[in-house]
Structure formats: structure tokens, C-alpha cells
Image 1 (cartoon, rainbow, N blue to C red):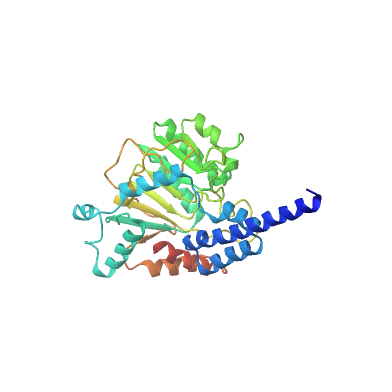
Image 2 (cartoon, rainbow, N blue to C red; image 1 turned 30 degrees about the vertical axis):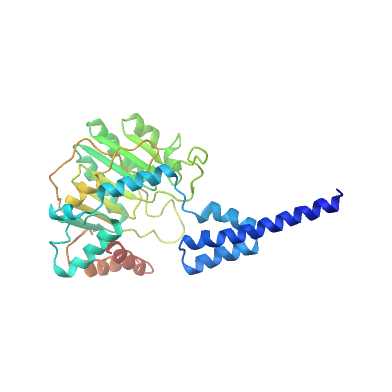
Length: 340
């Protein structure tokens, strides 16, 4: 065979497999049920250049989390799924809330497959410094355990304060556990970061979703753990958008980032901390051996607003008024979104 024959054969195979990729990717993309625009974009890229499009789709198109994580998620959802028996036992708020809130509760339970727990008090904290103050104060008052799960744990003044409170709590015999994202908190896990000193003080520190493509069977590395949660003695819980870092996120240009976090006391805080023990390197809060039953509520301070039914719009207005010009719309929208 001469050189021209080899070149002709190569292009024939190249073209044939290109059409095979195009045809095979049509049902693959359609079964993913992307938004129409996203589906058309993927198909356009693949039809324009099937090989490049296929590689890009395999890298970022599939939400591939790995079989072990999928199985753990399936078992956890089955464990906490809201059932008629749980409603009959009073573990769901669906049958006891006012009629105007019943549809909201049912929709929440349908989407999350988890029961809406009644008997809670929620404080919305929209100021980063006040949130850190509140978390540090609650950790200093902890008696049994402290569980923290955050996307970013910075090494700035906010991170140093929380880390100091964890070290002091561990010295008192409080079980302290911290999970932070391995990528977003890489400075925290560095040899010169805060993680080594916390571990030496007796705090259990774990990096969530470490970047290990081979051992984790090539899952999506860009899908990170963005949870921001804290559970203290099963009596107080925090959940929202604020990370353990200063509001300027390391001196970014522009105004400070506007976040909102809910401080929860009541039965919901107990339920939020009810996670199973998982191996190191995973993204769930480990279970705890002691389970508190009494919910504590402490006086609010500063601009912390106690939210009760009917107060949602008032909280949104107050958050917008507290924000600086240019941030009011974002704060107002965040308050509404997080209450939905």
C-alpha cells in the first residue's frame, strides 16, 4: 500500500467514526433531559466536531459522581424519606400547619423526600462578622459535640477565630469534627494552614472530595461540596450561604459578598445533625454518639432577625435596607430564595 492509500483509509475511518459519534450522542444527550438550549448547544458542538465535542461532554457534560457516592445517596434518601408512618407519628408538619402553609410543606417534602419538622425558631443573620461571632459563641458554649461542614474554610481572621474556638472546645472534651472542601479550602489543608494544628489539638478534620481521578473512577472534579452547615449539641444548627471566611473573600475587588445564614433552634437542628458515620474523604457530616433532646434558644443580638410565619417579606425588606447601595437587590433576592 502506498502513502496515498493509507491517508485515504485514515480519513475514511475518521469520517465514519465521526458520524457514529454524532448519531450515538443524539439519544445520549436527549435522555439527559437538558434544557432545550443546553441540549442544542451540545448537539451543535458535537455535529461541528464530533471528537472534540465528545471529549468535552465526557469531561463536563455528565454529572458523574461515582458509583459508591450514588449508592450512599440512595441509602440516605431511603432512610430519611418522609413516609405516611412518620406523618402519623407527628414527625412531619404537613398536617399541623395552618392551611395557607400546607401546600408549601407538601411541595418541600415532595422535592426533598424529607419531612418538614415543626417546632423550630429561625434567626436570619445577614452580616458576616455577626455570623462568625455567633458561631464562635455557640462553639464556646458547646458541651457534647460540634460538627462543621463548609465549602471554604479560610485562614484569615474569621477562620482563625473559629479554629481557636474548636481547639478550646476539644480541650474541654467536646467532640469536634470538621469537613471542608479539598479544593476550595486547599490553603486550609496546606502544611502551613489551620488543619494541622486542629488535628494536633484533637479535632477530626476531613477533606471532602479530594482530587484523585484514578482511585475515584474518573468522577467530575468540578462538582464540589458547597454545603455550609454547623450543628452544635443537636440544639443549634446553622445553614446558609456564608463560608468561614471574611466577607471580602481575601480582598476581592468590589463590595463585600452579601450572604444569608439561618440559625436554627428546635427539632430541626437535631434532625440536621442526624447523619451517618462515613469514611474519611467523604462529604457528609459524621454521625455522633450522643443525641441531645432539648432545644436551646438564646437571645438574638445585633441585626439577627427572629422569623416566624408571616415575617418573610419583612425580613427581606430589612435585609435590603441594611445592604449598601448596589447590594440591596441581591440581598432582597437571597432572602426570598432561601425561604422558599
